[in-house]
Length: 119
Image (cartoon, rainbow, N blue to C red; front, side, top):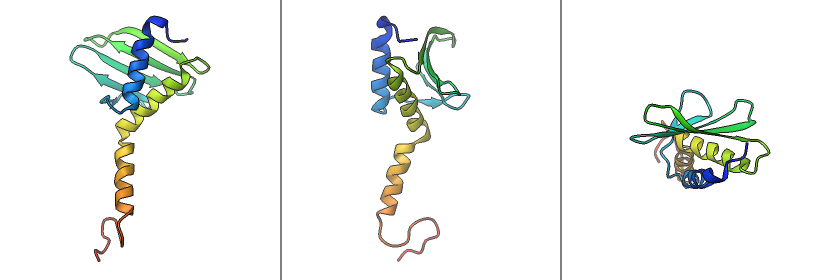
């Protein structure tokens, strides 16, 4: 189901802010599910295990869904929805930080890694 016109600004802002790694995503209860919490609401995003849809929920202060969006493969917003999942995953798993640190360590001359002789 495409994102309704009245919710496109919400969806687009969420995707863009997440791409810039400006959202403090947390892992949710299952794989491919992430959440960002605020004092009086939260946003949850998850991907169907079969990879055919991405679901986005706006949750009230009690955790009840007030808005549910489901973007299906083939919808206009599909690539943006998958981008949202990917950027949340990168943030939660610290992929960018870990890769940057690995590149720093590997660029050093000589032996690297725990137990490597310093020479």
